[in-house]
Image (tube, rainbow, N blue to C red):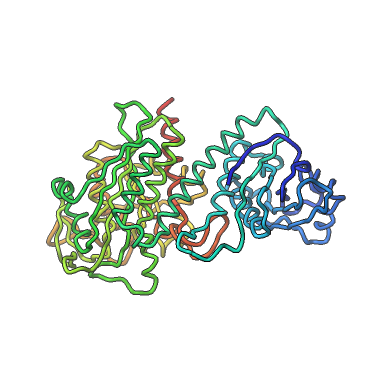
Amino acid sequence: MEVKVICGDITKVKVDAAIVNLFEGVEHPGGATGAVDQALGGTISQLIGEGEIKGKLNEVTLIHTMGKTEPERVAVVGLGKQEKFTYDSIRGVMAAACRSLRKVGAKRVATIIHGAGAGGMDVEGAVQALTEGSILGLYGFRKHVTKEAEHGEIEELLIVERDESRLPSLESGVNRGRVLAEATNFGRDMINQPANYMTPSDMAEVARGGAADWGLEFNVLEREEMERLGMGAFLGVAQGSKQAPKFIVMGYRGGDLAASPLGVIGKGLTFDSGGISIKPSEGMDEMKGDMAGGGAVIAAMRAIAELKPRINVTGLVPATENLPGGAALKPGDILKAMNGKTIEVVSTDAEGRLIVADALSYARKLGLSPLVDVATLTGACRIALGDICSGAFGNDQELVTKVIKAGEEAGERIWQLPMYEEYKEQNKSEVADVKNTGGRYAGAITAAQFLAEFSEDTPWVHLDIAGPSFIKKERGYLIKGATGVGVRTLVNLALALAEEQSK
């Protein structure tokens, strides 16, 4: 879908449908909605009076204009309560409106800028959110469906603004929103792919092709190089699969070449059976999404390359499968990680932390700082926080705060969990330096404490995205399946750090 900003009057734009809005509790619409109401002879006011239009959040009421305006239909979308309205509300509102209009066959759609009037929001930010919500909300994964879709797609979205002097800043907002949303959908495509179409080698090739398109540095470490580097934790997980492990390295250079790059690390388990500690069969199909962190990092590198912030960023994705083959890792085995620490493997299903551990050690070897890893690491975090938000853990409170803020701006909720020293006791091993699981209690925290052994004194944040990475029911601009969570948070963080450095 192409998104454009135009100067004009929403009642006079020749499109299949126009989107206007209403806050909950408003009885007499004003602004652009009022102008449309007047052109329709008070139809919107009448429907408000009859209780058919209430303005509840994401409520969509479709009105046929019968030639009274240039748009053939008008969609009145509810903004909810004014005091609770946010940029994320705009994303959800546009997703709901666009999906409703797609169902009725609309190809060209126009919209006013939600939140710019009574909402009192920054217009450029509102337009960015509007663009993101539209593109994210219309996403679908049909790569393996041969049956023709029940409906076509919206081809063009026109954002109508009366003040011509504001068009350049609005176009800037559209561009950023488009880049962020398209990168997120790119990540969603990777995560939704079944494991036979997204092997470690496939993942590396997607990243390689993307790096060439986006002008990024690119390298893949093969097994022999990983052995030379001493990545025993990563290779221990990989040894049960016939698929060759790949360690993907992507680099963006936009800042001072002498400055330490931001390091973003994504867990790339392209399929996780649990290994010898095999998972129950129910729900195991969802384990194709255990590389959601890796997909988020590759997609974020795409957006960073397109937006060109003045900062250096390196993306690392250790990619492998975790399968119970004849050569697979066994409970009780001891591995030696890249930083020299030995690890007792209590459960082969606590494998994500093993591959991220070596990735963190490699990031330190490269001199990356600060570090942020994104991983579908623990079911415990999903139990604690559900699919609403990610868990954050770290050794640098200032960095944790910046990551949480970057998530808030993206509409990606993040909740910080504690990293008290006492939790480390659960990871103590009698036969090695550390064991790979601290047991059932505080599982998300002990997993983070395990990773802290490898981030060491480098400023570091761990995001456990196990809950919100994959959802079973449509919610706002989040479509059933992979959500692409983490992509926009990482990009926002890079943009914020770049702005900080420039000052």
